[in-house]
Length: 111
Length: 114
Picture 1 (cartoon, one colour):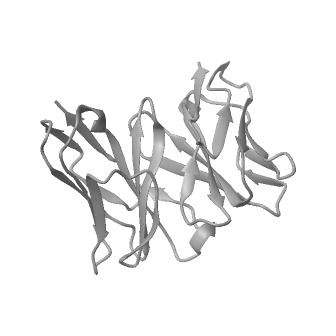
Picture 2 (cartoon, chains in turn blue, yellow; picture 1 turned 90 degrees about the horizontal axis):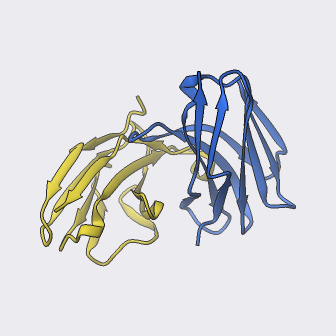
């Protein structure tokens, strides 16, 4: 079964609005990462948050992590049409070396 | 550009055939991961190698095999292909920080089995 589950599955917003995506996971983790994928392309790493961190910022991105609820959120502020992509969370299990990806959130930013 | 190179970009083949996908990791990265992405299964972890040794195994079929060579490039071999094997196959590499290293993905090989 999937370790990470993103929510919502799809999100459509207007340019300039904020977009929030959520990720829930099941087992304890060492870190959680967010990736972006443009259609048919490879995934691009956005941000990594460790299990002992609660919030992290990178440009217009803000990631939070709540290990007690086993959930994370990705906020993209002042969205642009170029942010249109699928966004995935990936968890690194404490006991494993592989990264497990959720099914992703498809974000559409309309001009 | 992630620095990870995958070849070929596209592959069309028939059922029952065998293909080899190739991946060159980012310079200096010792870990290579293979993922399969299909519409109905999402991004599925197949296998990981670290410096030539198998490190972790995921949902990899027995018909599939992989290896990492001394120069750190990796190959994924898919045999007795079925229609359901049609998918995007991604290779990713990661650096020396281990589990705190992000994955750097190639642009994938799109496999179509007819």
